[in-house]
Image (tube, rainbow, N blue to C red):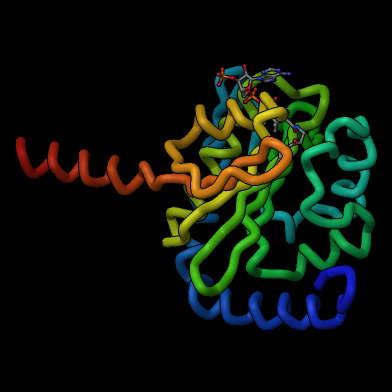
Length: 211
Ligand SMILES: CC(C)(COP(=O)(O)OP(=O)(O)OC[C@H]1O[C@@H](n2cnc3c(N)ncnc32)[C@H](O)[C@@H]1OP(=O)(O)O)[C@@H](O)C(=O)NCCC(=O)NCCS
């Protein structure tokens, strides 16, 4: 539909964004206050990072971030266009829960992640780490961030991952429990991410209640 009837795709996006904001806007504001606070994002290699919602990022900086990544980075990562028009459209879409992770010391975008979400309660995760920041735990920590946002507002989360994309597959399984919904062609898996936060809440409740 996106290629054949782009106007219909855009219309669906606008309606979805509007309904999503009505259903989830208040909860999202609360969760974003937490994840965008200064000391929230800590990955195993460093805590010199902070999270910025896509709507507050300079569009040119994001376009440049994508332009600087090597071609191989896009082999399994084609969620949307990377030109200025596409980025600006995403920034206006309140159901597209996109975030960048910035390196405080260099004021540079080190990673980008999103839950592409729908008002009926589903979100689809995706992420990319700058080539110079790979292998330091950023991808895994961004998955935790996406879980925090998605589960925090009550979404069910899904992801398609290729078994050939080892880093992506491993960061997906390191950060979350999941169940395989379907094995897709080309070695891809369609996953539902399990809400461990719920279990942790229950564990916490049990601990508190059970004394
Ligand atoms: C997938 C991606 C986000 C991972 O980010 P990252 O910050 O490098 O990943 P992490 O450092 O958190 O490592 C995650 C796991 O992958 C492993 N890993 C990282 N790079 C690897 C590599 N090149 N080969 C094999 N394993 C690798 C790590 O050892 C770690 O495994 P562990 O949890 O078992 O210890 C990054 O490689 C990327 O941006 N790829 C291009 C875009 C993409 O394909 N996105 C996914 C599709 S939505």
